[in-house]
Image 1 (cartoon, rainbow, N blue to C red):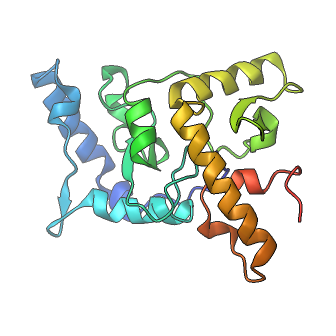
Image 2 (image 1 turned 90 degrees about the vertical axis):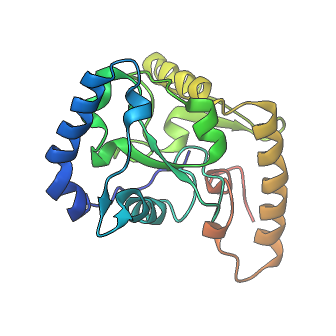
Length: 208
């Protein structure tokens, strides 16, 4: 995960939030067992509002997945941090701070899982080294040993919910790190924001 600063809520959400939330809540009341099925992004001027929102969400993360920081320039989807399929959170379906752009892997792993202690990369207090440490041998992510027990717990829950140490993900990070490291060493015009998993390249262990 790489920290980022959330942009202000788009005007289209501010203007329509109450109306769209009420409409969705009514649909869920009428179909109590199908909250995710009845959800649909409204259209504004003939375009789904999700198309407008995802571009802003992508800009926030420089077109990376909000959670794993991979998927550079691959078209992501909008994830509801507090899942819209959970009836406890239907009132948050159109909350701007509940929306994140996510890659397919993160969406598939996270699905409707949620925990109150899950870490958010746009929290002002979040930075990778506060909560996590990186194993450059296995390319795994682990809770920061120097963190408080509470912060270690939050880190572990986040790792588990997003399956950040799935073997496929570790191997992908290993391969991408090798490519990015070579670019850092050999390209004088190297740009970190075009790399996947930028948070690894920003760690003190990675030096030129």
